[in-house]
Length: 93
Image 1 (spheres, rainbow, N blue to C red):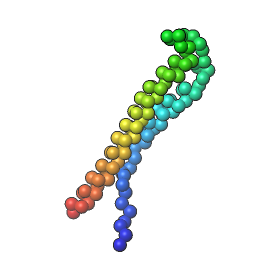
Image 2: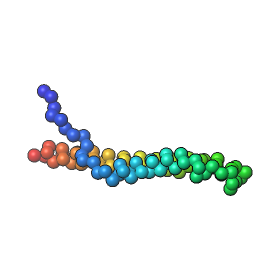
Image 3: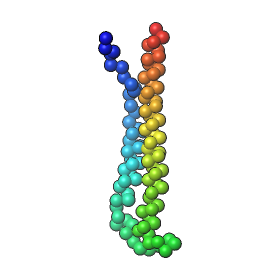
Image 4: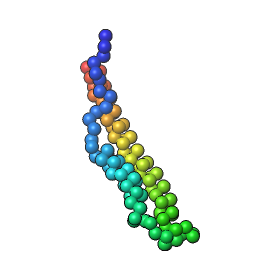
């Protein structure tokens, strides 16, 4: 006997996915715009701006990816709990 199709997740809200997409787009697109930072000055500890600006984006990108991950994980958890709540109500009948 086959089981009927039971959804594993409830309906999605678009907000968290859009926010995560914007954060990831910022992390990818801003460092790609090289004319904005292709200068030697100002120097920091003898390192030209071009290099330390790129290295500054490493922790910024890690933070943005972490925030995106949390947003999507939280939404996925909410969607799974929504289905569990519905299934629990049906089993109680």
